[in-house]
Image (cartoon, rainbow, N blue to C red; front, top):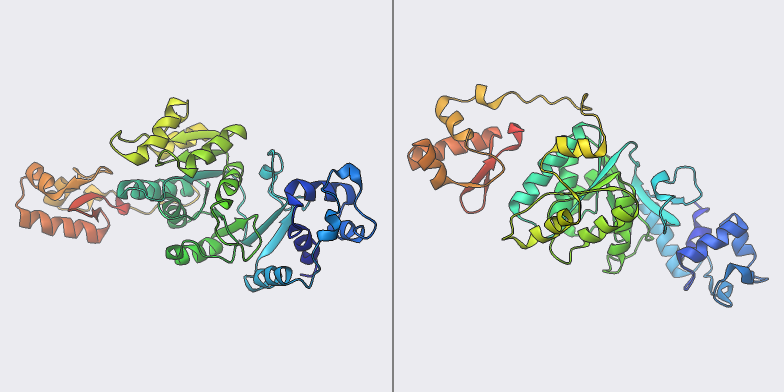
Length: 364
């Protein structure tokens, strides 16, 4: 692990930045040789700030030792832009990360970014989770930012579908943010990877998140925005995707919801409207002929008694209130309550706040 220290010393040099690190390594080929040259001074043609070489911290500096120790304790790894395992998709963007810290194993194959609002709707989260689950069965890696709301739902869906998922963080890979995603954080490591350009110990600062969005979009062949308010970071991710030549898709939303602004705005700008997995696969040019994970779910209507099947047939991803279902199915409130509970226990229905119901995960 000692080979990490030269990289950490350069990254922690105040005023050097990504472009400066790039120029140094392109000139000296290795961080060790760049550090050896600090005594005689870095050449002026590198266009670095004057006397910057005197600002390089020693390996024994507290910030270097802290980052090093945290990386070791997290059983993490470090990739540089020049390593053979560095993601090829990142090498050709305008501002690639010089260093990538990670935990887990980087997935291979085509990937889709799914991003959206932190303060998402119940329907948005359920829709995202089920969509990601289905897409994962076709071998797509799901990439997102492990934030609450749509991001977390995308990761959960990929995991449920038995697929791979990649979380790009706006903090160090040792930081669990938000804390409510602690369990999901560990699952992502076990079934994919965590990735960050920020060294271990880095806090989730607001300034970090716009930069991490360019990595999310670059690692994917397309970006899907499910829900996003007017100033959402998801729109920044979509902008990066366009700049990087990736496909941009959006799920249309009702004009009465704040979180519909982002997707509807993108659709006006020419994004692909999508509402189901087959449309996404078509946009991305991914074959759906053979699934990576074969589903084992039976046809729900064949497994339900007539009255339950009648209620089930009225459920989809649009929340329906129990009073509405009772009126349409001709059942009493008590009869409907028993059937809905039965459907819920079997996974054919899911209860939402306010006495509303949608189709459950077993029905898809």
